[in-house]
Amino acid sequence: MFFGKGSFFRGLMLPLLIFSLLFGSLPTVLAAPQSKVNPHDSSGFVVLSDVVPDIIQEIRYYSTYNFVGDRIDGYNEPIALMTKEAAQALKAVSDDVKAQGYRLKIYDAYRPQRAVTNFVKWAENLKDKRMKDYFYPEVEKNRLFAEGYIAAKSGHSRGSTVDLTLFDMSTGKELDMGGTFDYFGLLSHPDYRGKLTEKQIKNRMILREAMLRHGFKPLEEEWWHFTLKDEPYPDTYFEFPVQRLPESNLVTKASPAWVTNLPAAKTAKQLFVVGAVSGTTAWVSLHEKDANGKWQQIMTTPGFIGKNGLGKEKEGDNKTPVGTFRFTAAFGIAPNPGSIMPYKQVDENFYWSGDARPGMKYNEMVDIRQLPGLDKDGSEHLVDYNPHYIYCLNIGYNEAGTPGKGSAIFLHCLGSNKPYTGGCVAIPEDKMRFVLQHVRPECKVVIDSLTNLGGSL
Image 1 (cartoon, rainbow, N blue to C red):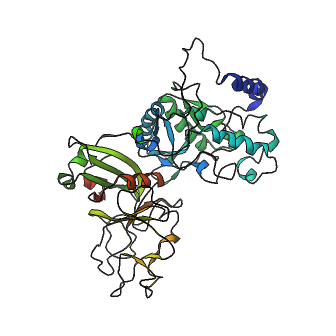
Image 2: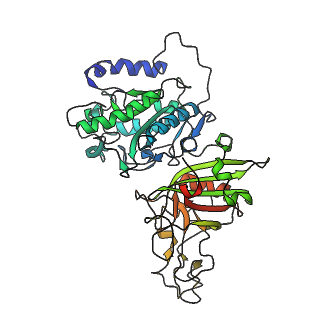
Image 3: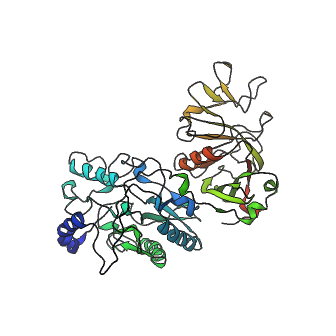
């Protein structure tokens, strides 16, 4: 968020802001003039998780847990967008830190100009201090402009800036950085010594050094903020919203050899693969054959599986089944997002039966008006699972409806911050929408450990 702090920066802030408002970013000596770019043109951008599939995303401005306290204008989906160049550089960072046992967690990336305008309007309303205790307890709100925390322009709008942290794969938690993202104060300076332990400073340096190695430059006042040095649009502040990009921007590549060698690939034209990596984390991907019969990977994302891992055997064991399945039904609390498969928008009347008694349609979607004797307590009232069931696909486990073998094994949206499911497979909402828009009834669903599948990240 920041534009400058400290005594030196306070002295320069006003003229810098005036210069920025009049002329854009600071000039580069003898830089070649940039051709006019349409700020509504997203063709130079990609969905970050399409390029870096193992990132974790917690897009704070899509949620209400941010310094404003509301979802921010222009954040239509909880996804990260970046310029193609910045995304490729961040892929190198991801590979670097992954070798050290970490994954990247993204808080924000491209930020539309309308979001920055939202921040300005919020800062001008001095009465709204709902989030002061969490994000700016040391700064009076009437000083946010003067001290550079809020400004009319943000480098994020140029598309090559990212806010992020590190996720420790051994502990399943964020690395302790000694301060929260978007905290307005000295504690956010990368090497601030006042309240940070040596371990916290070291953790910040792990992130900083990895970003520097791969072409990013830091902001000296925020440990989480980095910009690609050779950003492709240094003078353009884009205005399109944060949401799934047009199909023409879709990043595809040849499917890995281990996917094409799966037994299911011999007869399928489309594959949905869930490869459990460790614990409850999985690498999830969608593949299809192109016009030349070559397998193409069209979607990848991190996901979660059952709390107790793989190998489902019975109802309530919190395990995800292993095997080759199909998607049997598409449904959700939200309206149809453009599903290829027939889609049912559920309401208060719909349950997924967990009632094993004869005639109670165990492991099927039922309308309570047609089956009033259903054991509701033993079944799932679908609309109660929001945001998990905003969009869903039923994975055809136990299609025969064998009582007690297990029911309601879905592919669904991520829920809260729990890094596991009750046996389902969970992926980000934007990816779930994408899957619905692309998956066909004949798609084969393959679930196992990545090791057993012969795969690797």
